[in-house]
Length: 350
Image 1: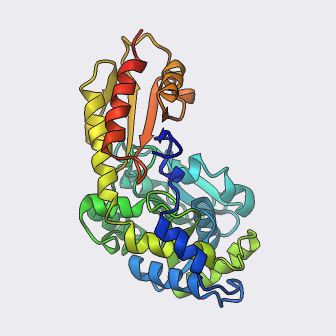
Image 2: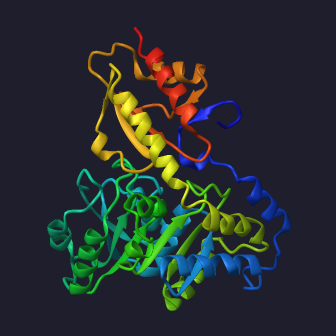
Image 3: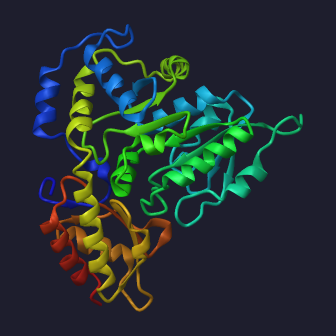
């Protein structure tokens, strides 16, 4: 619970733990643009090691991480193949197109978040002067809009094989890649070994206040630093933020399993409750989507308001009218889930 409310809008609402706050206060600082902030350097070294990559660079957000990565991989007029439900396409303000002149070829995602590889291969373009050149395949793990679903290692390996066959690069939007690794019970490197670059967020389930990290080869990260600077992302005494990220990586990964268990408990409770439709097969990590059943006469906006009155925050259904998303995190415990289920039961009463 945060500030008296059970906040299920996103895991971005998490706040730094007491240990993070202490680390931030005590952080040894320097100038990151000059490369002499020791705390930032340590975060980047730790991140690269976690991902099995040569180097890393700290950025302000996941959106900046993805944008920087795409601008590093692709030139103006080049093309990235991306899912129609991808965060890069849906929620990043068209940044790669607006700022980098990069074309996006959207392929409909499968329900589990994967891209059908036959369609990916059919979309690849090359030497025809009338067409953009395909440079990159971008995938997302876990997949947000598909319900926090996990892309398993064998799929990642197949994407890598296709990319190698067609001389393409692979970028992973790994905002919640640690959730994927915890759900699969594998080291995160089992997933990231198949990609050329990966961005992951410190400020979601890992509970740091700000920041994401891009990881890749030394050459890629050197070029990404230049792009970061062009985007205005060169930070100075950023160690005060990086210190929380270090605690996040050292202390907050394994506990993600608790968030997954709470999401499952919420999903099963809703599935057993009249008035809601939940696909339990899609509840694999800390995100669940669910809908009001057709026989529920209460408007979804009314449900959202009634939940707020019972101290539960949800994002309104918006264009989906009867569809909701809930995201569990470190500030939601089992008791909060039980309260939320009772609140939902009250909220759908006619």
